[in-house]
Image (cartoon, rainbow, N blue to C red; front, side):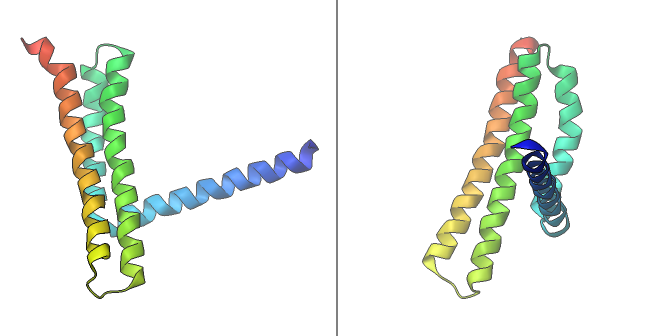
Length: 124
């Protein structure tokens, strides 16, 4: 293995990091929903750190927020691929976009459920 294998591995990891940052920049620049959800996470993540009483609670609160961003990124990627294929209406294209949207909806419902389950018992 030696230094050469290690260097190639580190170069590959660095390039992958660069591609990931390019993807985040593209999402922030081109996707209004991602910008809105990222903004919501910027507000709610510090609140989660403050409201969570244990590491597990904080992880659940912040993890649920992260899941929304991940799901939105995947949904945006699906939409970009479908749009790249063609602009004509097709049942499968609509279905793919609708399913991606449903995944985002479920991830948002997950945030609500987790935050309620973690925080509501304290207020009773």
